[in-house]
Length: 222
Length: 247
Image 1 (spheres, rainbow over the protein chains, first blue to last red):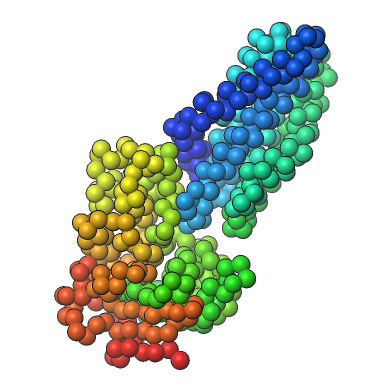
Image 2: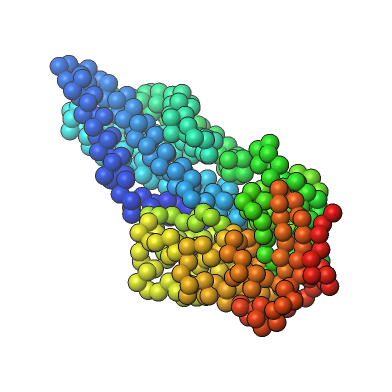
C-alpha cells in the first residue's frame, strides 16, 4: 500500500508542479481572500487581529476546495479511472497518496497564508508547538475528508458545485477546532488549545481510515 | 485446453440498459479474434466486460480462468485495454506517463524504455507533455503503457484509429509478436480489411448478441492473412465451417 501511495502522491505533485495551477491560481486566490477580509474589517484593526485565526482557516478551507477539486479532476480525465482500476494499484494506497499530495499542497498554502496574516493583520506569532501540531492535524483532516468526498462525487456532472456543498458542512468541526487551537496559541494559553488539537487529530484519523477502507468501493462505483 | 475467454449467454448492463444481451464467445490462447458489427452492437462492451470493467450479471463469463461474475478484479492485472480514451495525464510527459502506469503494474524499468522504443517514442518525444501531442502520438503512448504491462490478453478497441500507416503496420507486428509470445488478442475494428487480414477468426455481433462466428477466410493463405506474422493458434472454433450462424 505504501509503495502505491508514494507512486500516486508523486504523480499528483508532479502534475501540480507542471501545471502550475497551485502557484498561479490557487495561491493568489487564497491571498486575495485574506486581503478582502482585511478590506472588509480594516476600520477596526483590533477586530481583524482578534478574528485572524478564524479568517486564516476560512481562507485555508477555500483554498482547500480548489486543491481537492483539482486532485479529484486528475483521475476524471480521459479514461484514467478505468486505467486505475486495471492497474492493480491498492485503492487504499491510491487514497493515501492522493490525500498526501493534497496535504503537501495545503501545507505550502498555509505557510503562505500564515505570512499573509502576520503582514496584513498584524498578528504576533506565538505558541509555535501548538500552531504546528494543530496545523498538521487540521491539514490531514481536510486532505483526507476532501479526498474521500472528491471520490464520492466523481463521475457526477454536477461534481464541481456539489463538492463544496457536501464538504464544507463536514469540515465545520475542523474549522472550529483549528480556529480555537490557533486562538489559544496566539493568546499565550496553549493549554486551552490542546483539547482542540486532540479533536483535530481524531477527525484526521477517522477520515483517513474511512477513506482508505471506502476508496476501493467508490472507485468501482463511479 | 481452457479458453482464455469464455462467455456463454453473457448479459451485461450499462445502467438499466442491456448492453450485452446474451453473448457467446470462446477465444483460445494465441488467437487473434476480431469483433465485427455495426455501432451499438456491443463490441466495446464485450472488451470492457472481458477487462472486468463492466459487470456481467447473467450467463457465464470466465477470462484467464477468473470467474468475472464472482469477482472481476483479479483478471484486471493480466489484461491490457487500449480503448477510445487514452488514460494519460496531459500535464505529464510521455516518459512520466509510461513510467507511472508501468510502475503501477510492477513493470521493470528496462521494460518501460523498451516499450517506448517499440512504438517509436524516441528520446525527444519522451520529454514532451502529453497535452502537446497529436492524437496518433497519444495513441502510441497508450500503446507503450499497454506493452509495459506485458498483458496475457490484449483488448483493443479500434486500435488503428488515429495512427499513421507506418505505426499501423508497427502495431500489427507488435500484435503478432505478442501472440508468438503466448498472448491472446481480442480486437474490435471498423477497418475491416486490415483487421480481417490480422485475425484468425471473426465474430459478428449485433444488438448485444453474437450472430455469427466466421472461420479464417479460406481465400487467403495463412501468409497472406498473417500481416502480423502471428502463428496459427493452439485451437480455434469453429474448426471447419467457414461461417457458423448462431441460433
